[in-house]
Image (cartoon, rainbow, N blue to C red; front, side, top):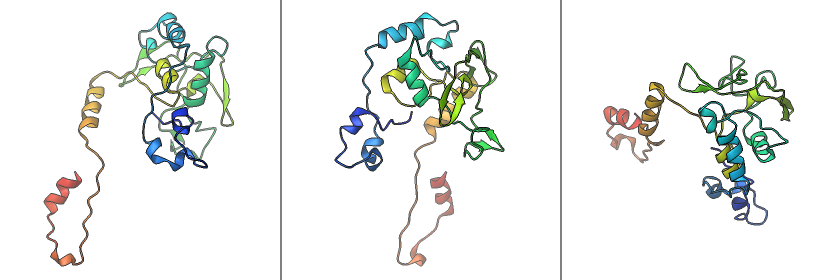
Amino acid sequence: MTCNSEWKEMKDKLEKGQRPQDRLDLTTRVFRGKLMDLKDQILKKEILGKVAAYYDKYVQAEIRDKETNMPLYEVVVKHMLHGPCEEYNKECPRLVNTTCRFRYPRPFSSKTMQGNDVYPIYRRMNDGNKVKVRNATLNNRWVVPSSPYLLLRYNCHINVEICSGLKAVKYIYKYIYKGHDRAAIYISHDDDSRTISEIREFQDAR
């Protein structure tokens, strides 16, 4: 989830002449966004009404139809289009040997199915739906998976994925127990007075 500096709750706290990046005490907090009035209608259509696969009830990776669902179309275009990189930006830092390390653009898929790794292959129809973003014309292959409900609620970039299998369990375990980032600092006017314990330093760094 990435903070949206255009949130009203954030702008209301700025002093005259300040920008959101001037107030790290605000940008490091997550504000609860106002839910749109069309929430119930959108959820009924997008999540419960017109889906074929079980996963599609919760996570989707397509540009929404502009005519029938303008609210979701706008937030997806604004927050959930990757990059672009590769042929559109060969200097992009996400590239590893000219290939996007996040595997974009993803292949088209007529339906959602479980992939060979932790994550599913989400439905990305080749429906001709395109949008121009950051000087590039992008289609469903560039959409980052997200939850329609959370997109409308928080109006920011929030990547949501369904993960299952042993790899998911291992990842969650590793993530929970990896601990916080730390820095060990020692200040002394006389280096000779310090007794160095290599075992302790190894354990602290680990």
